[in-house]
Image 1: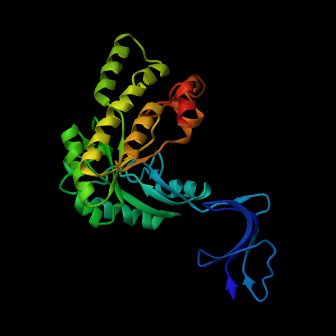
Image 2 (image 1 turned 90 degrees about the horizontal axis):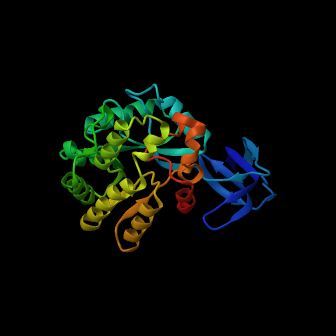
Image 3 (image 1 turned 180 degrees about the vertical axis):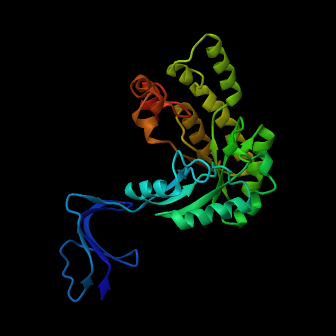
Length: 303
């Protein structure tokens, strides 16, 4: 019997435990899990990796990946983005629809799939775009292979055409359709109307420092956007995927809805657990994210 790869002497992470084990792999799949030192007998292994002192993990799935290509390759293209995923142990990515032109129809989805099929170094799935302008194409995107959608509440950018909901009526219709076709929608939760008011006040006061950016997007603006979506998800039964949550209060409210029957998934990011607004002076524009970094107290509460 022949195997392509053996990973030996590692500490294997399973859903229930950490244990020493050797793995045998054939055709890219785990074929056997052995106790360390198990005699191989007549087994032929083409390649062996000694993982002594290392933890052996499954390949990770990242449901929130932005690949700039097409249209935004100054940020990242399909080659560099998927190489980075592979280097970090991410073997499957779900690619967000924000590109130029954005993925907001069956044709655009199939074009993106062809691009990634040619250039990707890892497995991939595609998210479509869902918004007030794309109500007529949400179903066809699912039929073409979209595993879910991304949506925003707020102003337009070129890469967000067809991904924008202007109001709660748009949000309701989008969630209603997604519920009928059993697809999730990832939502960026920030109340841009209130943020615009605060931003203008700071600009009128002559504030153009980095801290002004964070002050224009306080935590409660995340909660404002989140609660509307939670109510709509509860009413429609739609699968709501709350992305990059940074506010512990919004997180607490979201978890309450989830525990009471709403179909809600919750995501945060490493920077909301490891960094806070005090790092702004240290990292400058590299710490400018949306939603912004929060206070040290909120960072601790996110844990």
